[in-house]
Image 1 (cartoon, rainbow, N blue to C red):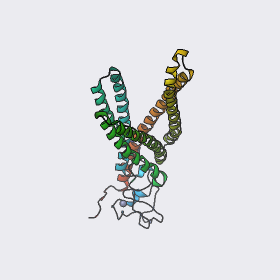
Image 2: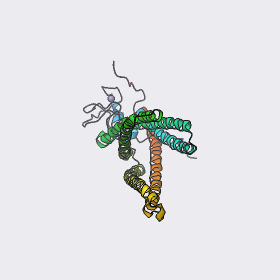
Image 3: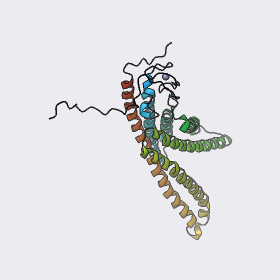
Image 4: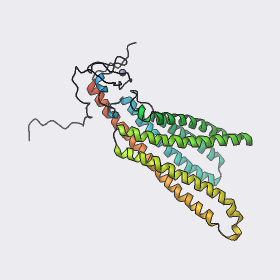
Amino acid sequence: MTQGTPPPSPPLPPLPPPMSASATLNSDTPCRKCGYNLRGLNVSGRCPECGAAISISVGGDLLRYSDPDWLQKLANGANLIVTGYIAIFLTTFVAGFFGILRLRSVLAVGTLVAVAAGLLVIVGAWLVTEPDPSGIGEDRYGTARRLIRITLAIGIADSILRIITQFSTLHPGVRLIVHSLQLAAGIATVIGFLAQLQYFSKLTQRIPDDSLTTRANFLKIALPVTYGIFVAFTVLTVVQGPIARGARALGPNPAFLLFGCGTAIVGIAVLVFFIMYLFLVARSGRSFKEQAHAARQMWHWADPNPSGLTQA
Ligand SMILES: [Zn+2]
């Protein structure tokens, strides 16, 4: 046995590049806690704005040097998105089953549960698009991040509309307007969804995790393409439906069968890619949690006694 071998210790996060205690920051460096520009200040000092040790802000733009509380929000947001979508899936499945049995009261409860699950997804996406308090990353994904939040607000309005239409009898004219608004909200949701994949493809570069980035970039193309084809096939099938019924006496309509089969096949592809998206979000959530843990250790290492308080 070799004497003096240190006991195994949990792996520490990579530390920021070593800097002399007397070094002065000569380039724009945002404080990792509040975003204050620390240029011209000494590395051994504290942020004049929030009191955080300046040494935590010199490690570059990787997530593991970010505010641990912010990273934990990202992790919680990702988990809520996944939980919400699973709840929507289950509710849709159960509601579909009771829909066959025509139990209206169960369907109404199903709508409420689906709306609640949708709100979980919205809250999760809101948390996951919380800006880095240092302002880092905004130049790369700030637009996508804000676009997601705008579409989330539209999603909330859509949820309210759904409850209203489910529980009240609307004038046909009003109903038409509501359906048009719901269609617009649906389009906004798709745009927000694509912005989310763009956001994840950029944010995961800050882990960095190439497999997550590659997956997000793949889904950014695969999902809209298959979804677009799915919508086109659905419309074509619906259009062919009456023609098929009218021509039933002449035998089966090949176009109707073709579009129907196409819709089913592309629909399965959309579902598979959507499940891949859920795995992407779940894995990102786990990764954000790990980064939060690493950041907490890093911040503690850099500043064992954080003052953390702004002078009143
Ligand atoms: Zn600060």
